[in-house]
Length: 244
Image (cartoon, rainbow, N blue to C red; front, side, top):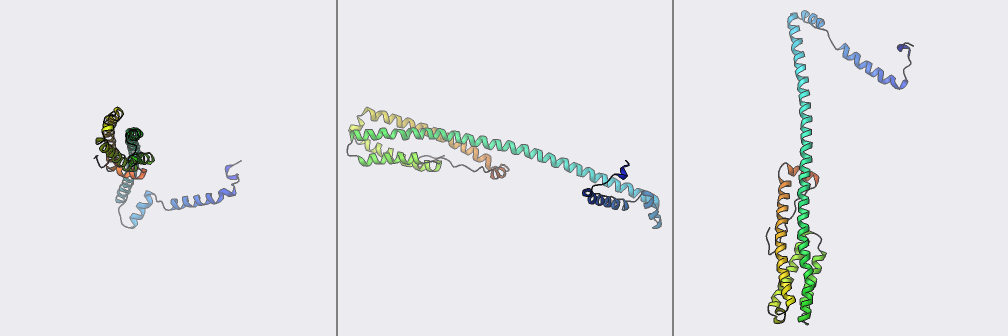
């Protein structure tokens, strides 16, 4: 069967007619070089100028086509480079954030170690000073406050309470000869001092990690990506007796 005799489905009819109409319009609006030369002759324009103009227009169109192609390549390259940069920068953010979390875990370990010494202080106090209920209560409350703190900011406040309780206990112990003569108390003093030193070291390392992280996400153009991805600056861990 001849292709011209094949039936066209009704669903294609409107699309075929629309495309044919568009093609005809484009064809009817196009002119051959001879037609343009003839039109130029009627307007008293020599044919060679018409041919020269045709070549110049074609050259311009070719240049525009090449420029669009170059722009498309540049745009695609820019998007590719931006994508690679974004992935690399995101990985850098994540790595810095993980380092902060790891350092904070070490700080928490040492803070927990010190908090765990408080029950021993309570036992020593109860063993040598039967009537020091206020001191016992202060120590117990400070430890409970620390255990309930669940963020670095709350931990910092709770650490102040622990510091105050331990300092008051040490002031009290300095004036209590029975405590001073206790080997258990002496051992606790050494443990507290060692823990304080470890806390200071881990706090310093944590704050250094926070500083590196904050610098990474706050530098331009990293800051733009960090804001879009939800990376926020972290706070230093500091107490009244320490500085970052």
